[in-house]
Image (cartoon, rainbow, N blue to C red; front, side, top):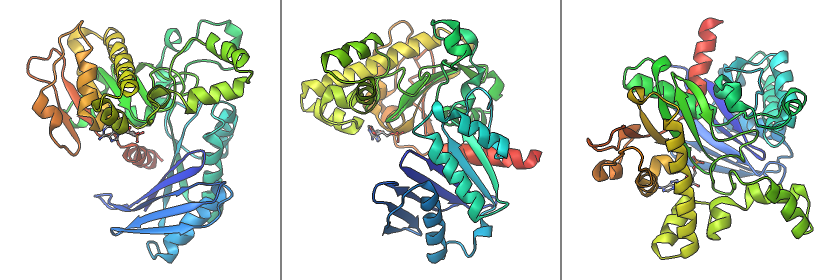
Length: 398
Ligand code: AMP
């Protein structure tokens, strides 16, 4: 079996896949509120098993997940898990693709803790917990940053003194890379196109939102930056603002940089502007009831995505563009958001087919009309599948 895990700052999501050809999902679940009170939910054979038990850290959470998989008889022994694949947020500049976990790769993840202090520590502790509980298990890590290592210095450098980059590693790293890589490979597969020749503008619109310009199959530019706070407006993140606002608000509110940054990460974006919710479903519902703040949040969100699409289309050779792709929670599901974004683009003739935009779909669908100059798609992203694909590739090359 393959175990794919995704460690957040206070959670571990997991999915257990069979190793046979059809790679069925055997079970999935989440350990959450780690470090608070602890809750574990395991879905198995259409039943939800809930446990409430204190989990002080990610190590205890992994122990608890594995113990419950045994007691629920989902696995008979730990050795049935032959490979563990972890999503790690930050691999810095050293890691350009998914890797087998070795002492050296662990050292790199550790070194990147200062760049992703909320996410890398939990991932590392979880990896070490698996090492302890299932010695000799093959472990693989996939990184959110590695897909964007193809960016040229003109894209990844900030116009600040060189020493900020040379000495302090300040640059654009970009995130959501596992999702972007999945979309590229899946797009190539379903349309039988060479991934190395793909030219796409991919909009990963979820609670965290970003856009990636894919040129000749690699990331040419992306909106998130040194951290995921940059770029688009998101569920609770502001996206780009003038950085002078931070010092100004520290002074005006007699606060500190930490608190203001916290507000930009957790209390801004759709939530901050609408004062309704960070969830796009709530925003569109409130906007349709004439809630003016929700309407403003919706306009601001869709305007920013539209502007970025235009900017990124301009990086690509016109005749080689394969399409614009919407993905992640909002991109996959909200026909209203997709329509509003495309309606805000005038420089190129883009048109959505209403009927197609509303149709239910499993994997992907084209939503553009025959009049649209560029094809537009909605694709379901699948980060776990991407990690699984990378595991298989690494095993083959071993
Ligand atoms: P993600 O971060 O990719 O899991 O996306 C989560 C976000 O997707 C939620 O916060 C919602 O805002 C959004 N979402 C999910 N389903 C829908 C939907 N049917 N319509 C609009 N937004 C949705």
